[in-house]
Amino acid sequence: MNTETLNLTTSKGATTAVVARPDGEAPAAVILIHEWWGINDHIRDLAGRYAKEGYVCVAPDLFRGKVTKDSEEAARLMHELDTVDGLETINEAIVKTRHDFGVQKIGITGYCMGGTYALRAACEISDLAAAAAFYGDIPEEKVLAKLKVPTLFFAGTRDNWINPEKVEVLKKAARDFSLQIEAVSYDADHAFFNDTRPEVYDASAARDAWQRVLAHFRKYLVEAARPTGA
Image (cartoon, rainbow, N blue to C red; front, side):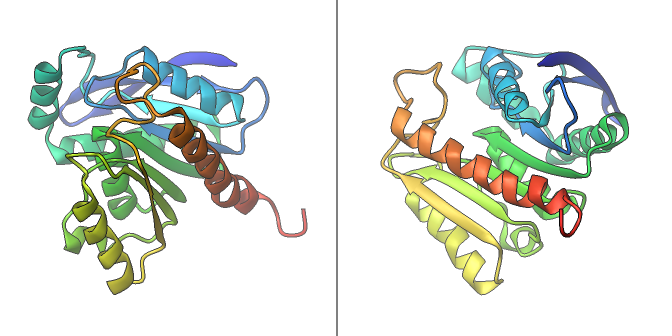
């Protein structure tokens, strides 16, 4: 596995992305959007996990270098991030990933705040082939109606932010607009995938979700990139 830094330029200023990639060829990439803590060791570890599965993983820094362990500071950073700015950074990461690494298919995933942006990007950025959003907020109906890529959405039934009522809104929109989205809920709390937070981490739910994401990306990023008959 190789790691490097990708420089990104946006209208609001420069930022970077953490890149982890396998030693050999990678036919597909995963854009990884961080939680409200910023690009921390947990996100770097997740990028490495995707690289070990054969993907180029690119994690753009939406906070432009700011990282925190304090929840109040994290909330402030998240609320100060303009949605348009965040989506522009993600789009720039997608463009650079395709140009620099020559991948055929690109998917997106994210956790908490990153789940919000991953789902929103899947609705608004046409250059994505699949998405997997973890316990992020649901965009308004007019945005959600634009979702065209196959998407997984993960939530915990004990989550007080992305609660079961919000998940039902997503499911209703999926029915109303015939969206290609599957919502998966576990008896777990918010951030159940984060193994650096023992107070909320749920190993069973995280393990099942990881296997579902790998199967999802394998189908829509790897197998879809193979020539017919290969």
